Image (cartoon, rainbow, N blue to C red; front, side, top):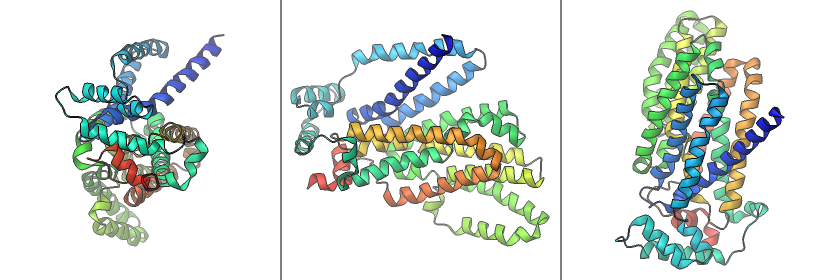
Length: 397
C-alpha cells in the first residue's frame, strides 16, 4: 500500500511539473511587454534554480518524507495565487473575447498606458490565424511550421543531450570518482548556479537571446589559462602529444571571438573529461580533482547563464497560438524524454569511459554553437506577432 502511494505521488508530481514547465513560460511571454519579456520569462528559471538550491540545502538536515511535506507549501500558495492573475490577452483574443482582451491588457500594462497599438496587432494576427484550422500534433510536421519546430525541438534536444541532468543528478558521484570532496563540490555548484542565473535574467533583454546562448567569451578566456597549464605539463611528460596540444592551442587562439564565446558548456565538459583522462594516465593526481571541480563549475555557470532558461523563452515566443498547445506539448515531451535518456544512460556511459562520456557531452555542446548560429533567430525587442510571422512566413502570406 505504501509503495503504491509513493508511485502515485511521484506520477502526479511528474505530471504537474511537466505541465508547469511548458505553461508557465508561455503564459509569462504572452502577458509581458516586449522589452521585458525575456527577463520576465527567465525569472521562472531563476525561481526554479533558487527552489532546487533551497530544497537541496534543507535536504541536508531533513529526511525526504519531511521534504515532501514542505513541498506542499509552495503548491498551495500557487493555487491561491491563480485566483488573482489575469487571463492571457492573446488567449482571450483567440477565443474571440476582444473586450476582455483589452481589459486584460489594461490590467497588465496600467490604466494610463495606451494599449491600442498592441491590441490592434494582436487582433490582426489572430484574425489571420483564424483563417487556419486548429492543428493536431501530426499537422505540426507541415512545411508551414518547419522552422519553428526545428528550432524548438532542436534546442530542447541539445539542452538535454549536453549532459545537464546527468551532471546535476550524479554530481556527488562525479566528484567522488574524480577524487574531490562531494560535499564541497556540490555546495560550490549550488553557489555558482543562483548568481549566474540571476545574471542571465539581467542580461536577457540587454544582450539578446543568441549571445547568451553562445555564452560569454570571458568563461573561455579565464579557463583557457588553466587549459594552457595542462598543455605545458602534458608536453613535459609526453613529447609525442606536443603537436596535437599545440594544434588545439592554435585553434583556441585564432577562432572567431563570436564563436569562442559559445563554448562555456562545451569547455566545462571538456575540462571534466581531461580530468578523468589525467586520472587514467596517472598524471598529476593532485591537479585532476581541481580540474574536475573547475569543469563542473564552468559548465554549471555557463548553463545557468544561457542554455538553462533561454530554450524555454524562445519556445514560448516562436509558436503561433493556433499550434501552441500541440507544439508546446511535443517540445516538452522531447525535453523530458531526453532528460530521462541521459539520466538513465549516464551510469552505463561512465562505466564504459569516464573521459569519453564528458568528451561526448562536450561535442554535443559544441554542436549547439553551430545550431544557434545558423538557425536560432534573435527575438529581443520584437513582439510575439512579429517573431511568429518571421518564423512562419507561409501563415502571413
